[in-house]
Length: 220
Image (cartoon, rainbow, N blue to C red):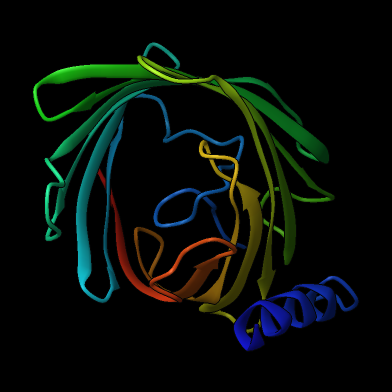
Protein backbone atom coordinates (compact mmCIF):
# COMPACT_ATOMS: atom_id res chain seq x y z
CA UNK A 1 0.00 0.00 0.00
CA UNK A 2 1.34 3.51 -0.82
CA UNK A 3 0.93 4.86 2.72
CA UNK A 4 2.62 1.87 4.34
CA UNK A 5 5.53 2.21 1.93
CA UNK A 6 5.75 5.94 2.69
CA UNK A 7 5.68 5.22 6.44
CA UNK A 8 8.57 2.79 6.11
CA UNK A 9 10.59 5.22 3.96
CA UNK A 10 10.09 8.16 6.33
CA UNK A 11 10.92 6.02 9.35
CA UNK A 12 14.15 4.91 7.67
CA UNK A 13 15.06 8.43 6.57
CA UNK A 14 14.58 9.88 10.05
CA UNK A 15 16.85 7.22 11.52
CA UNK A 16 19.70 8.17 9.18
CA UNK A 17 20.23 11.82 10.18
CA UNK A 18 20.46 13.72 13.40
CA UNK A 19 18.02 16.52 13.98
CA UNK A 20 13.04 17.25 22.08
CA UNK A 21 9.95 15.74 22.39
CA UNK A 22 7.73 13.32 24.26
CA UNK A 23 5.93 10.23 23.04
CA UNK A 24 2.63 8.95 24.37
CA UNK A 25 -0.34 11.26 23.83
CA UNK A 26 -1.96 10.46 20.46
CA UNK A 27 0.80 7.93 19.70
CA UNK A 28 0.45 4.20 20.33
CA UNK A 29 4.09 3.68 21.35
CA UNK A 30 4.69 5.09 24.84
CA UNK A 31 7.87 6.59 26.29
CA UNK A 32 9.52 5.96 29.67
CA UNK A 33 8.80 9.43 31.07
CA UNK A 34 6.03 10.42 33.46
CA UNK A 35 4.55 13.81 34.24
CA UNK A 36 6.58 15.63 36.89
CA UNK A 37 5.90 14.78 40.54
CA UNK A 38 2.99 16.80 41.90
CA UNK A 39 1.86 17.96 38.45
CA UNK A 40 -0.90 16.97 36.04
CA UNK A 41 -1.36 16.87 32.29
CA UNK A 42 -4.15 16.50 29.76
CA UNK A 43 -3.63 14.50 26.58
CA UNK A 44 -6.46 14.48 24.03
CA UNK A 45 -6.99 13.50 20.43
CA UNK A 46 -9.56 13.24 17.66
CA UNK A 47 -9.03 10.28 15.30
CA UNK A 48 -11.11 9.96 12.13
CA UNK A 49 -11.38 7.11 9.60
CA UNK A 50 -14.61 7.13 7.62
CA UNK A 51 -17.16 6.29 8.80
CA UNK A 52 -15.74 6.05 12.34
CA UNK A 53 -14.54 8.77 14.70
CA UNK A 54 -12.84 8.60 18.11
CA UNK A 55 -12.53 11.40 20.66
CA UNK A 56 -10.34 10.69 23.70
CA UNK A 57 -9.56 12.73 26.82
CA UNK A 58 -6.75 11.37 29.02
CA UNK A 59 -5.89 13.39 32.15
CA UNK A 60 -3.10 12.14 34.43
CA UNK A 61 -1.37 13.27 37.63
CA UNK A 62 1.84 12.19 39.38
CA UNK A 63 1.30 11.27 43.02
CA UNK A 64 4.28 10.05 45.07
CA UNK A 65 6.29 9.29 41.95
CA UNK A 66 3.57 7.30 40.16
CA UNK A 67 1.52 8.71 37.29
CA UNK A 68 -2.18 7.83 37.60
CA UNK A 69 -4.41 8.34 34.58
CA UNK A 70 -8.01 7.87 33.53
CA UNK A 71 -8.88 8.08 29.83
CA UNK A 72 -12.33 8.25 28.27
CA UNK A 73 -13.00 7.53 24.58
CA UNK A 74 -16.22 8.14 22.66
CA UNK A 75 -16.75 6.52 19.26
CA UNK A 76 -19.05 7.74 16.49
CA UNK A 77 -19.48 4.27 14.99
CA UNK A 78 -22.25 1.65 15.05
CA UNK A 79 -22.29 -0.61 18.12
CA UNK A 80 -19.23 1.09 19.65
CA UNK A 81 -19.79 1.99 23.33
CA UNK A 82 -17.57 4.43 25.17
CA UNK A 83 -14.34 3.01 26.61
CA UNK A 84 -12.32 3.88 29.70
CA UNK A 85 -8.82 2.97 30.87
CA UNK A 86 -7.56 3.37 34.45
CA UNK A 87 -3.76 3.28 34.47
CA UNK A 88 -0.68 3.62 36.66
CA UNK A 89 2.83 4.25 35.34
CA UNK A 90 6.15 4.56 37.14
CA UNK A 91 9.63 5.29 35.85
CA UNK A 92 11.94 2.51 37.06
CA UNK A 93 15.22 4.00 35.86
CA UNK A 94 16.19 7.34 34.36
CA UNK A 95 19.68 8.67 33.66
CA UNK A 96 20.78 12.07 32.40
CA UNK A 97 22.57 10.32 29.54
CA UNK A 98 21.59 7.01 27.99
CA UNK A 99 18.27 5.36 28.72
CA UNK A 100 15.12 5.25 30.81
CA UNK A 101 12.74 2.40 31.65
CA UNK A 102 9.19 2.50 32.98
CA UNK A 103 6.34 0.10 33.73
CA UNK A 104 2.63 0.73 33.26
CA UNK A 105 -0.48 -1.23 34.20
CA UNK A 106 -3.97 -0.52 32.92
CA UNK A 107 -7.51 -1.83 33.41
CA UNK A 108 -10.02 -1.46 30.55
CA UNK A 109 -13.77 -0.93 30.52
CA UNK A 110 -16.00 -1.15 27.46
CA UNK A 111 -19.18 0.68 28.27
CA UNK A 112 -19.87 -0.20 31.90
CA UNK A 113 -18.26 -3.67 31.70
CA UNK A 114 -14.74 -4.58 32.73
CA UNK A 115 -12.92 -5.65 29.56
CA UNK A 116 -9.46 -6.83 30.66
CA UNK A 117 -6.04 -5.45 31.54
CA UNK A 118 -2.71 -4.62 29.96
CA UNK A 119 0.92 -4.29 31.02
CA UNK A 120 3.67 -2.43 29.19
CA UNK A 121 7.41 -1.79 29.54
CA UNK A 122 8.45 1.40 27.71
CA UNK A 123 12.18 1.87 27.09
CA UNK A 124 13.53 5.21 25.86
CA UNK A 125 17.02 5.53 24.37
CA UNK A 126 18.83 8.77 23.63
CA UNK A 127 22.10 10.42 24.58
CA UNK A 128 20.07 13.24 26.15
CA UNK A 129 16.42 13.00 27.36
CA UNK A 130 15.83 16.50 25.95
CA UNK A 131 18.04 15.98 22.89
CA UNK A 132 17.13 16.03 19.20
CA UNK A 133 16.46 12.31 18.77
CA UNK A 134 14.71 9.79 21.00
CA UNK A 135 13.91 6.12 20.33
CA UNK A 136 11.07 4.40 22.19
CA UNK A 137 10.64 0.63 22.44
CA UNK A 138 7.58 -1.07 23.97
CA UNK A 139 7.00 -4.64 25.05
CA UNK A 140 3.69 -5.50 26.67
CA UNK A 141 0.94 -7.98 27.39
CA UNK A 142 -2.77 -7.53 26.69
CA UNK A 143 -5.24 -9.79 28.52
CA UNK A 144 -8.87 -9.26 27.41
CA UNK A 145 -11.70 -10.46 29.61
CA UNK A 146 -12.78 -12.80 26.83
CA UNK A 147 -10.43 -14.03 24.15
CA UNK A 148 -6.78 -14.83 23.78
CA UNK A 149 -4.03 -12.85 25.47
CA UNK A 150 -1.37 -11.35 23.19
CA UNK A 151 2.06 -9.83 23.34
CA UNK A 152 2.18 -6.24 22.14
CA UNK A 153 5.15 -4.20 21.03
CA UNK A 154 6.33 -1.25 19.03
CA UNK A 155 9.13 1.12 18.14
CA UNK A 156 8.81 4.88 17.90
CA UNK A 157 11.09 7.73 16.86
CA UNK A 158 11.01 11.44 17.70
CA UNK A 159 13.31 13.63 15.61
CA UNK A 160 13.63 17.37 16.23
CA UNK A 161 13.45 19.36 13.00
CA UNK A 162 13.54 22.92 14.38
CA UNK A 163 13.05 24.71 17.67
CA UNK A 164 9.30 23.97 17.87
CA UNK A 165 8.84 21.16 15.33
CA UNK A 166 9.34 17.40 15.78
CA UNK A 167 8.83 14.57 13.31
CA UNK A 168 7.08 11.48 14.72
CA UNK A 169 7.07 7.93 13.37
CA UNK A 170 6.07 4.58 14.87
CA UNK A 171 5.43 0.95 14.01
CA UNK A 172 3.55 -1.33 16.39
CA UNK A 173 1.68 -4.60 16.88
CA UNK A 174 -1.73 -3.99 18.45
CA UNK A 175 -3.68 -6.18 20.92
CA UNK A 176 -5.52 -7.87 18.03
CA UNK A 177 -2.31 -9.10 16.41
CA UNK A 178 -2.46 -6.50 13.62
CA UNK A 179 0.49 -4.39 12.45
CA UNK A 180 0.10 -0.64 12.21
CA UNK A 181 1.96 2.61 12.10
CA UNK A 182 1.70 6.38 12.21
CA UNK A 183 3.78 9.29 11.01
CA UNK A 184 3.36 13.01 11.45
CA UNK A 185 4.50 16.22 13.10
CA UNK A 186 4.35 17.79 16.55
CA UNK A 187 4.29 21.56 17.03
CA UNK A 188 5.24 22.87 20.48
CA UNK A 189 3.72 26.04 21.92
CA UNK A 190 6.08 26.91 24.72
CA UNK A 191 7.09 24.32 27.30
CA UNK A 192 3.61 23.17 28.30
CA UNK A 193 1.49 22.69 25.16
CA UNK A 194 1.80 20.89 21.84
CA UNK A 195 -0.29 19.90 18.85
CA UNK A 196 0.09 16.61 16.91
CA UNK A 197 -1.00 15.82 13.36
CA UNK A 198 -0.62 12.15 12.40
CA UNK A 199 -1.56 9.84 9.53
CA UNK A 200 -1.90 6.17 10.44
CA UNK A 201 -2.87 2.81 8.97
CA UNK A 202 -3.14 -0.85 9.94
CA UNK A 203 -2.37 -3.82 7.71
CA UNK A 204 -5.80 -5.44 8.07
CA UNK A 205 -7.97 -2.34 8.48
CA UNK A 206 -10.57 -2.25 5.66
CA UNK A 207 -11.31 1.43 6.34
CA UNK A 208 -7.88 2.50 5.18
CA UNK A 209 -5.74 5.28 6.69
CA UNK A 210 -6.89 7.48 9.56
CA UNK A 211 -6.04 11.04 10.56
CA UNK A 212 -5.31 12.08 14.15
CA UNK A 213 -5.27 15.56 15.65
CA UNK A 214 -3.88 15.61 19.18
CA UNK A 215 -3.56 18.34 21.82
CA UNK A 216 -1.34 17.97 24.88
CA UNK A 217 -1.24 20.34 27.86
CA UNK A 218 0.90 20.23 31.00
CA UNK A 219 -0.86 21.78 34.02
CA UNK A 220 1.11 23.66 36.65
